[in-house]
Image (cartoon, rainbow, N blue to C red; front, top):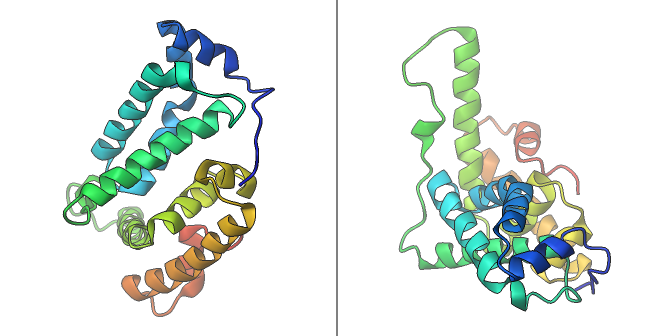
Length: 206
């Protein structure tokens, strides 16, 4: 795990103001990170409602615990991502069954046989299959993929958030790529079109 000092953390002053109860400073941080955290939580949990709950809880914890944040241990954005991911882990572990993807939210409401609509339908169905493949990955492999491939963080940034070494992060990515490729091909039934599966998952390269 890298030792990331927050000497030049651009959020440092805002966090200090939040710790004093400054709601305006909190809003700045919510606006800065809300969409990014929502994207991470949605990739981890698969539903918008669950992701919104997680992000709301993450910012509540920011408000309550800003005074306890230690800038010498990690930059604020890293800490906030850690909180979000750990909340996602808790949600996944407490679930009695795996979540079901709301495919109906992504598909057209009525049948349309035009070429453009059929393409949208095919892409939506493939997206559902690939989200399901991501959900079947072990938690830490999924997290590595979400941070590096979907959120386009560097390996070093993702490793800081996950509190592992870069080498361990790369190992998680390698195992996740193998699992996603195999799962996507098998589940989609795309006649062994491995290249398409790789393109859709974004796991072709680190």
